[in-house]
Length: 69
Image (cartoon, rainbow, N blue to C red; front, side, top):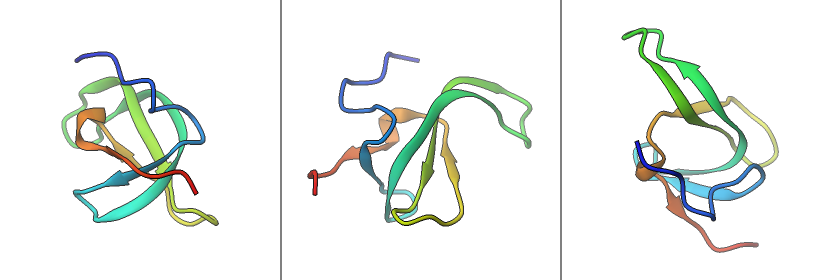
């Protein structure tokens, strides 16, 4: 897997097209997919602005940069 681009950092606002929603990056780090048991070394942990349920994106290439607010 390639290195994440510079616009992917903790606190950045991004778009997850797969879920059609925006999130704030809470953490970038290791995550084990519970279904495949595959370890992802740089998964992206996202949370909606203002709080809510966190979700994980295994491949940073699936995310899109959003305009800063």
